[in-house]
Image 1 (cartoon, rainbow over the protein chains, first blue to last red):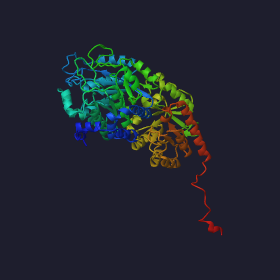
Image 2 (cartoon, each protein chain N blue to C red):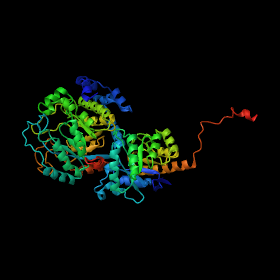
Image 3 (cartoon, rainbow over the protein chains, first blue to last red):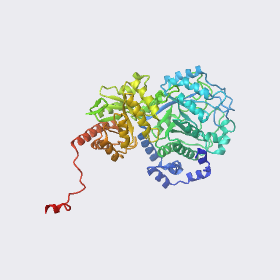
Image 4 (spheres, helix red, strand yellow):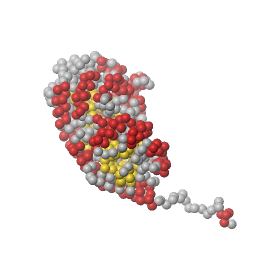
Length: 375
Length: 255
């Protein structure tokens, strides 16, 4: 199989949805009691039939997570480099048709932001941009990574999908992980939400993790934007994608995020609401299905939710995030991609993690693990 | 007394430093265990600001030696590069060679490990490679100049015990270098078992770090390792499936 698309095309959204919703209590028990779980078990765990088993799922999820990851929580922070974007995405504050001022950080501004972020203790950074291929391209990323890398042990990207050779070119600059969310695996709805720009090409986005795997990336992040479509069906396809990738690109690590649609000025109301119980169910389902997957929760979620969910299977968290270019130091008050919900400082979050009997981990990678270009 | 390279150890329990709920708990547990050799992942240590690194500060005891590991590398080339930086930064020739390109089960790559062991031994490192319980690979590593071998008992972090015991016994029988059973030891009884069959040492992390009481568990492992070793040295009495019958096959000789 040359890419996930071939496998994906053998599935029908409506049939998958129906099969998830037709799971019974017996299917859920089978999934919980099994020692080796497959994607059918995952279906049962995300189904409405699993709702009465939430406490049991949470206990199991916590136990499995501690065995694999210990009592630790990785901390990372996003650095928004640019909000220029040629795509129209109905749910995003950076959408081309949204009349906000556009900004791409200069070298000096990037270093200003870095200085402020470093003071907060961070050592893992996620560089984020919109999609503006004329100004924010591979050379821009190389330059930004050269500026950032001396200050951080671990650098990840959340930018437009790139070609395999472009990813390969960024690896010696210290690129560790790339996050690329499909947003939704519902092909027709995807079109509605992405009417213009390069992002409107569903298949190109769908095949991005294949390009990353072929390039030999250390880690890739998957996920859907929860609220666009039925979250259970979308999550099934995410898990299917994950299972395919783990076999095809066995040297890469994987992480999953669960962004719930957040308000921004003039933005879209979620078509489907996912409540807190359902998000806990999804987090636990992923953990029980896949013991090794990294699960990440951002500041989109509320304080109270994050306080309580961090022990249920989550392995990494951001804190004190700003979602606008320049948000940490250059111009703190403008151009946000979305409103964050948990505004506590990294220090407060680190204290919270400690108070729950976990160790906040700031550093879990080292530049000595990447051979530089001149060696 | 156990000797690896030119270093002697009173304790045959080696400890990993990951997965603890805090570095304070880790330190207490480590002291309770009596261990003299602890692994530290290069990726967790801040080389640039060693004096400010919390983990390193907690490991700063005169009886404790650091064993940096290369966790995170995927091939021999990366491992050799990382090991050299570790030696420079931490001032030790000891290196735990971990090359597991598979991040899911962290299975060691035997081919890359053999290549890296040979290169690092030539560079003067005391190499302790993490490997499958593969007796032939152990002999090849010996020829390549390894200081010890670290075969797994079961998948790392699994707490499943000595699933590979038949192969561990062959390795112990054949080895000219210390055999340290690494990975999968889930309970003090597993550690004792490994020592009883003649392992020179064991390395434990998850079973101690993730226990609700890591300090007590550190001590429990210390006692188990000492007990297992003592039993090995005293030689276990042979096992019998049942009572020994009268001699139906040889009684004719008595007539």
